[in-house]
Length: 300
Image: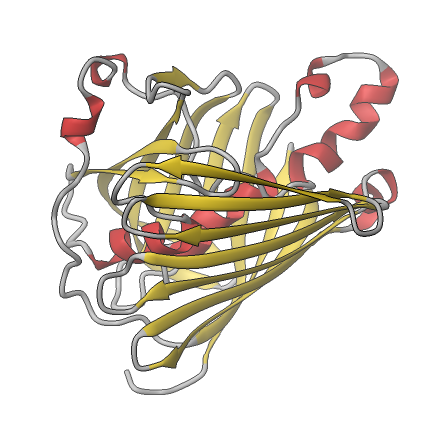
C-alpha cells in the first residue's frame, strides 16, 4: 500500500516528552509508554532539517501537481512498533475510497504487553482527503492516556487549517487555533501526494505538514532501491530518508531536538505500502514494521 501509514506511525511511536530525558527509575519506567504512547507527529516526519534551507525555505517546497501513479487500493494493514528490540505497541489501519472523490484513512492504536501496564494509551484516528487534488479536508483524532482524553479536530481550507482541541477528564475544555499557510497537508494527504510522485532515485520532495498541533517542513529524499524482509513478507523496496523542521511562530525553521534520522522502506510496486521505518532518536532506534496486509479488492 501506501505511504500514509509511514507518516501515521510516527504519531504513534515517536512523540517524546521532555521528562523522558530524566535518568531516574520513575522516568525510565515511563519511557517505553511515552515513546510509543502518543501516535504524535509523524511516519515519519522526523529529524533535524538542513540548515541551508533556513533563509528561504518556502521557495524549496515541492510545487509539482499530484502525479499519475495508480490510485491506491482499499486495504487493511497491521503494524508493530518497537524500541531497543522491544515490541511495545500495535496499530491497525484501513484505507478506502468511500465516494467518487474522497479518500479515507481510519486507524486504531494501543500500547501492549508490560508497556501497557506502565503507560496505558489508546488512539482512534480518521482523516479524509480529496481524491482528485490529494488535499486534506478534515482529521479527527481521539487519544486516551490513562484517564485523560484528548480530542483533536483539524479542518482544512485553501488558507490553512483550524484546529479544535479538547483536553481533560470528562467533557474537558475546547481551544481553537488557526494556522494560516497555503497548501498545507495533514499526514494522510501528504502521504497520498508523495505516493503519487515518481519517487526516482535521488529525488527530493518537501512538503509542509500539520499533523495535529504544529506545522513541520518534511524533506523526503529517495536513497535508492533494495530488497527487504518484514513479518508480512519479502519485497523490493524504495528506501527513503526523512527529515523534519518545526515551523516557529514567525514561520522560521526550528531544528528537532530529539530526532536524528529516519529511514523508510516502501514497497516498489503499484501499492507502495510502508514496510518498515527506523528512526534514530536520542534514546536509540525506534521502529515500525508491517505485520500483515489484506486488499479489499482484486483489481490488480
